[in-house]
Length: 406
Image: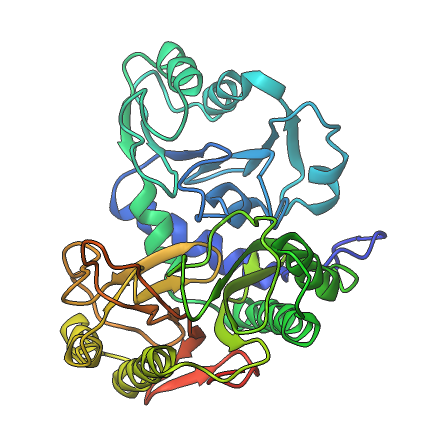
């Protein structure tokens, strides 16, 4: 795109998208008087799958980022290949022509690049990661990296620049939303394959294979496929496990799942429940009806300008029906796990974020309704929900898979 020579036909964002991102980040840097931001690789919580380094460099996607970035307020952006793999992939994909190899000493290479910028011995350096904790050696940036930067700049003021990157990334561009549509379609394909192929005798590992086979051939990769299978008459699960077991599917089982397939760093997220050779029992019928009602109530208030209290109040249908939830009910999504992160009154996700929804934010609404925690009582649960786009007057579905019991 836009004149980038790409003989290997990797998908790319345009140079206009690059310029949009870089301009927005530099505007924030100017506001906070930062000379440079260093973005380590592999930062953040495991669900923060797109590192800030990839967001700024366009290197990698759908997995670990073997790249770090030195992003100056003025001057050339530098991508640093941090693994033992050849530099070929970063050179092919990177938005910048300054690509360097560092392997396990990328903190030193980053510091060397900062010195080349001529910022003196007391620059104001931002360190950015998705997971936070960047102010101390125990933070997500890694102990050795911190030491290498501090040794090179003992007098520098090191600042947590994580908020700059997260704030810029809350609202998606049209190009990003297009990529999210592809991730949603790949995730839908995974569910279609799972739903059509599930039958008694298959184990959970084989169910995972059904999901992956549907999108790998189309260039998709796996972010997650959490699949729970349990007997409705005697449930042993209320949330899909992260690792598949060897338990075999049986008639009368309920299958509930959370699926996200990447299109590079942009994944859909689809949560659904279906039943094997049987209709839902009264309990599962009530659980699923409550989850669907909660999804409808929450999405009914979603629009540009929605306050967090409106979302929390809309979810009250869960508790009114005598149930609770087992995960965040709403969370930002699309290149990372972002705010707003909201639970319900019986299962809060921490203090309500001090923000309102904005047009072109993308969020997952996922009322994962379960029975309440009671001593001596096994819990049961269902999954429903999906990734949506916030619009001026409401929301737009990015997935095509119908809701309701499969």
